[in-house]
Structure formats: C-alpha cells, structure tokens
Image 1 (cartoon, rainbow, N blue to C red):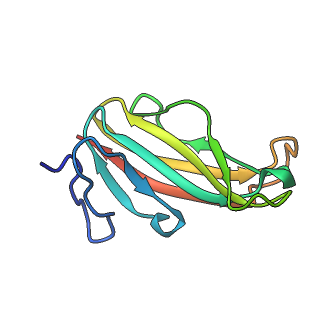
Image 2: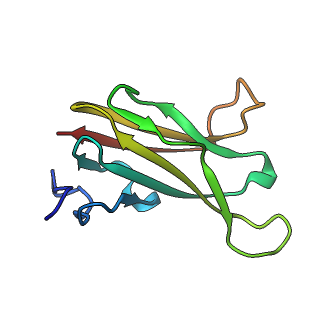
Length: 124
C-alpha cells in the first residue's frame, strides 16, 4: 500500500505506508501529496555555528504542522562543522498550502533570508 501518491511530474516519489516523506534541497519547488496524518521530513544543509538556522517562514498551520523543534546533525566531529537540519511535519487537515522554510539569522531582524526552500503540500 502506498500512502503518498504522485501529483505531478515534478512530484517526489511515493513513500511506503508508515514512512515519512523525505525531502532535500533537490525537492525545492516541487508539489507533494500527503494523506491526513502523513509525515514529512525536510533535511537541509546548514551550520548553526554561523548563527544561521532553518525555520518555518510560511504555510497554513491548520493543514500542515511542525512536529517538535528542528534538529541538527553535524556531518563530522570537527568543531564548527556544518551538517543537516531536519524539520518534521504532520499533515493535519485536507487542503493545499505552500510550505516555506527560511535559512536566516533570527537576530538580524531586517535582513532577508540567506536561502529559502518551498514546496506545495496537498493533503487529501
């Protein structure tokens, strides 16, 4: 049984039931489909030692909600090493929304994000 289906040619591959849909930088701009209760994981490169972090920058939280805090896993044991931030989401209700993530320094209030990541999420 497949819990996530393809929506368009630009959609990510379906994921087996019970497994979270996993996205990376390569999925920026795509459309994905989830069922209510479905899970989504977005893993993006970053380095918190530089003051930057990935955060939700937009999306309808009644349709898709952030589950917990973003997690960071360094790519090595070296001091100041970059790695991957993982943000986890759950499909909460039927609908469609743009999910936007921003990579920024939260203390730089007027600075635009260094990078962004956006996907369209369709929840059935």
